[in-house]
Length: 333
Image (cartoon, rainbow, N blue to C red; front, top):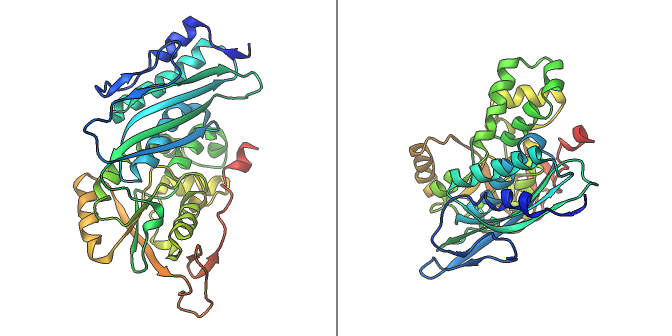
């Protein structure tokens, strides 16, 4: 049935409110279309980010929360609130409960309160679609466009973390048929537990001049976006990019470039050279691995006289001027 959920089904969705937060004056409730959040005493900047997620069928609720909160964290803020718009292909209570339980548990883990949203059944959909809006506060907003020539580029955890988890779950059978061992697939599926960059960003934000959360299109897209936003050129060496063995195995099996596919779980940060040690030490203190993968250069500076413009990525010296299409899409199609 197309349209809004009935009262009983809606009550299940409204009951998933994430963490308790005293600043929420009016949260999710039947008949309420907006949330009221008391910002008295909060930091000076409210950061808001929105993202939809639909293709990762097995963990759509969990990933949707992380993807939205990651964008807020990568801007230097602490995510505090979420609104959740959920479109379901049918009124199957088990499917609905699976998604809302994932959303609720993940938000509680991050300490984020779900303050509102909207839910409908749309039979034209093939799978659930979660659209999240995350909000948080900070006293120092860190943009993707803050990178400066001379900054070093750091990447936490590794490329393709989110894609690895998707391949090991939604495409597990295909990976197994291509020769990926069951133990490797089990470990890769566990990468779902690592797609948050909230702790990564909290550790490095004081030292960073820019931060970005690689999502669709992976690290290469994040590099193009960072270079474009900051009016710079970024130079990266592929063999310096951390890629986990499970990621290599799953991506190689299905012909996916780990640098050009869903990358939630890694944080890209541009850090002045004199603060790199500070940033890496802060990450090490919370148990987060990091690699220095390249540097930021002024537009027109690639060391070869080819005069690359702002927004250019140099990968092992080869120019990339446009963000690639994510290499998981052909698998879904």
